Length: 325
Image 1 (cartoon, one colour):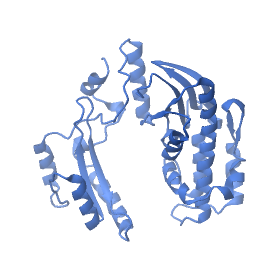
Image 2 (cartoon, one colour):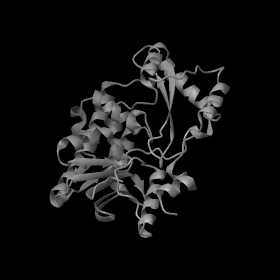
Image 3 (cartoon, helix red, strand yellow):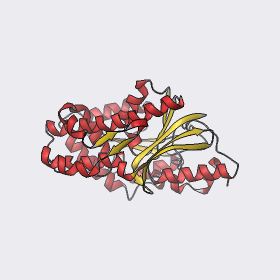
Image 4 (spheres, helix red, strand yellow):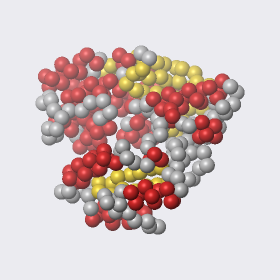
């Protein structure tokens, strides 16, 4: 999927099957493990355990990553260095049991809905810095000893785009690929790739460009009929320059929506529906509330082609175009 003939592979996640990560060398269709990371040394759990004290929980990690640039990691750097240890040969150790007691003694715990203080922003920055130090430590060592200058990433922690951007700019690797399905759909995708390889009919080793693998929107007539049915609740406009018109709508109202049918590939198609709340204005909170309510109202009634189609539920027709059946 990366398009690389050879690369280092790093999977980093919260946990699964008593492990939280794997470092390996991928060559062609072969994967040779170099190291595994137990759940006790989980970088995903390091992040999750910390953000509990910032008023967040599972699947909120990206919010804290976004909060981190507003803080300074220096005030809590020494505190976070109690939570992990960098070892020789690219190894590391996480002390998850130290996080809760230390933070309770050291910071004002934020409850959900409370305002953010500078301390909370600084804590987010320190957490992000700790994650980056550990991952850089692991990858720098193994890149040096293997001489491999390409990297493939997978897992929930691998979706930390701040980390990925710094890795790419660091010069350690010439190119980086991030596998986008860091949930159950990733398991389904991996199983399909593994079985196709074992059957001697490997999937093409091409760079994954997009993941529009669900059904298309249907005919223009079908879409029009669905939109007409919602005519009492939404305004509908067909236009050639969608981006410019959407920008005008955003400037005028707190909520707009766009729909795209990706037909660039005969093999992979999925309708994308995007809601765009107005940002940077007093109406933002109102717009966000309307967005949430509107999305919930539309969800049970939306067109079947708009429903999310995970990789794990590819229909036989689509699967047959991508894997030998």
